[in-house]
Every structure is written in C-alpha cells, then in structure tokens.
Image (cartoon, helix red, strand yellow):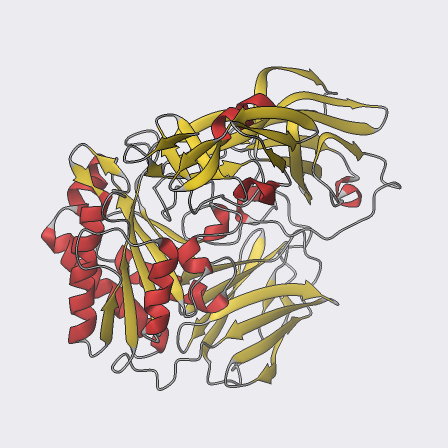
Length: 552
C-alpha cells in the first residue's frame, strides 16, 4: 500500500445531501483520501482486499486502490465518487471536495413529476402563494447541460443554487401537493394529484424566495476554509422572507380599519408570550423582521389594523408598540426593553409572539469568561488573496478583541495566540475546560469570484435562540463601525446541513464572525487597517454587553 506524508492537507467532503465528512480526511494533489470507516456513514459497504477496496455504493459495485494516509488505511474518495457518477469539483479556498448528483431527466406527464439523477437525492417540497405554485428543490444536485426535459407550459426548471436544482409548477393545488420524501432516491416520482399525497407542513426558509429571474446565489457552500462560510441567497439583515407577492392586491378594504387586540398571555423571567387577535383575513404568511436586536417588526399581509386609542402594553419587557398600516400590510413594531429572541406563529385565528429573554446572570460583562477563537492557523492558512492570509488577519483581530474584553472586565481565553494549528474539536474543548460563558470565532470570508460579494456575517448554530440573539447584537454593533456592508446574522445551517463544527459543538452561546471577503478589494483593504481591527474589537465587546443588557 502506498503511503503519503508531508504533501497531504486536511480536507473535507460535501457529498450530495449528506453531512460534511471531515476528520482524518486529506487532500493529496487532486485526490481526496478518507478512512475506510468514514465512508460507511454514507451507507457504503466496504470490503478490504490486499491492495484494493471493493465498494458497494448507491447500488453499484466499484473497486479502488487502498492507500495509507495520515497513518490510516484510506480510500481515494474522489476516484470512487467519479466511478459512481458524481459531478466533482474542489473548492480550493476551503479544501472541500464537492460531489453533486447529476440531474439527467425531468418529466411531467400523466399527473406525475419524475426526476432522474446519477446519484440518490433528497428533496424539499413546499408551496408558495400569489401566484400559487409548487416548489421542488433537489438538494446536492447539478442540472446536466443536455438533460432530457419534458414539461408543460405551467412548469419551469433551473439551477437555483450551485447545489440545488429547482422545479416550479404553477397550480392552484400547490398547498395540497406538499409532501415528504421518505427515502433518498435516484428515480424520484411525485404525484401531482391533490388527492394522492399525504400533506406534511413544511417550513419556508429564507432560501425559498423563488425568483425566476434570479440565479439564487452563486457561491459554493463552505467557501471560506475549514469552519468558515460562504454566502447563499439570504436577504441582508437575516430576516424571515415572506412568500407573498408584494405587488398583490390586498383583500382588505384599505378604508376599513379594524381594531386589533394585543394582550400578554404569559410572562416569566425567561419569556413573554403575546397574543394578537382580531387580525382579519391574512393574504399570506406572517413575517417578522428585526431592524436591530431591540426592535421587532411583525408584518401582517393584507390587513389594515390599529390598536385601541391610548393602548399601553402591560409588561416591563416592552417599551412601546405601534401599529403602522400600509397599502398591503400592517406592521406592528415592538420596541423591547433589551435585546430578545423572537418566534412568531399563527393558529386558531391569532398570532402568537414569543419573546425569549436570555439567561445572563447579573447582566454584567465583568466576571464573565470569553473564549476568543482565531480561525485557522499553522498549515491551515484559511482563505487567502496573494500574500494576505486569513489565519494572520484572524489572529491579529482576535488579539485586539481579547484585549478589549479584558479592559471591559472579562476573563479572556484564546484558542491560539500564535501561528499554530488547533483542531476544530480542541477549540471547543479549550472553551469548556475554561468554563467559558461565550465562544466567539473570528474568520474572514472568500468565494470563487473576486469582487462579486462584499460584507460581514455573524453566524449562529441553526435556530439556537440564545446564540442567534448574540449574533444579532454583535453584528449590529460591527455594522456601525466596520465600513463594510452588513449581510446580517445567519444560521450556519444555510451553509452546511449540520452547521459549523465550532458552533455545533459549543456548550455556551457561540457565534462565528465572517468580517469581510478577502477577495473583495475594498473589504481586503479595510480588514488590514489597524483602525478597522481596533474598532471591530470594541464593537464585539459592545455587542456582548448589549446581549447581556448592560449595553446601549
């Protein structure tokens, strides 16, 4: 068995819809090697022979050479995936091998949608309104240039994102056709008979804003290296995206103003539940936005509402409530006494607004332990442009941030203070050993096309309300001083299905900051300036203070 040593680099694999494969995964030239046991997580059956490996995967038998990499028996994953029929590319900035299933046929006939692909795929199926249409997103897939496509005039298809093929079918029965996919398959059949599928409620995510004239985002997932993040199709500000056509005619007479009822249902030290009633007929889903962490806007499409004269909300958690009627919606604006998380749901002819108050102890930064994680390091340079390396920028900014926290009275722990490589899991272990109250990872972004994107993002893990609020608070402060556009607070689930390792494995409120794009000329110039690094360090401290309730 051949062995490879110094020329190998740590890497990871994004294989269609599966969670990222990392840990003891190495890149050697254009090949990617993974331990034999690792690929079994994909359902592959592996048999070791003397000099090769027999694999049964995705219904196909293949053979590849057996190698020794990193002291372990490993298989050439790129070669194996190529034999299985995957579309392959390396994202060099993150050393990520991206493997997509090729969609080679789409047909709509006899009341059924059929999608065939080179590898099994999963789908996300949901409905949109105004006009009503069924959306089928094929995940981890690429549309073959010469794919066989047979569709009627009310349907269309496109490469919505680099790893998502989208089929759109305009039909009045869209909401009745929403259904779940039980098992991944390379020969998908979806009934378009409203009486056939079982109805399953599907959440509409920010990525679901379907625009036939938009490319839906051009950036590969994980385009920044290691635990950093590229950007997708989310709107700036990190808000939930409505699926209602903003030009739709409201169903409510704009001259007929209804009086809504807003009351406090339950309040505790950790949350406040508000009920908004008598809202009339909504023409689409309720949307909420957070212009800043202490302001919540709840948008009621198709309504024209007001609050009773002299209305006062009976809770110290809310300073003021305003009802702002517009031509197509009423916006209820809540000014909060401090930053809070928010969830908005509808049901039983009422809108439920739940505000989450984070557990912040005495609400003071002094005495808290903050773990600052400078991304990458050592042989893991992260993203780079020319002689400018992410690992150097993150360390410089992390040191200044640590100093700013110390001056504010916090105890600071750094995962690295020099140019050394620290494994991802070890970074979380450092925070845990120190009993850190917060984990803040600092990164610099990148993507495939220079100067195509500019901006900073604060990532939180999935829908963790506490970390989401922390990300909003910190990003809000950074946006005021960085002179780099703010792209808002994002869930790391937009980039990887399982999120980022350092956020997923954090035991405390944790965020990952992408402070700008290293391959955007204006961002790169700002990232290297001392005043930027000092201002951002102070802004991060203020953001944590805001989160704790002792900020602005």
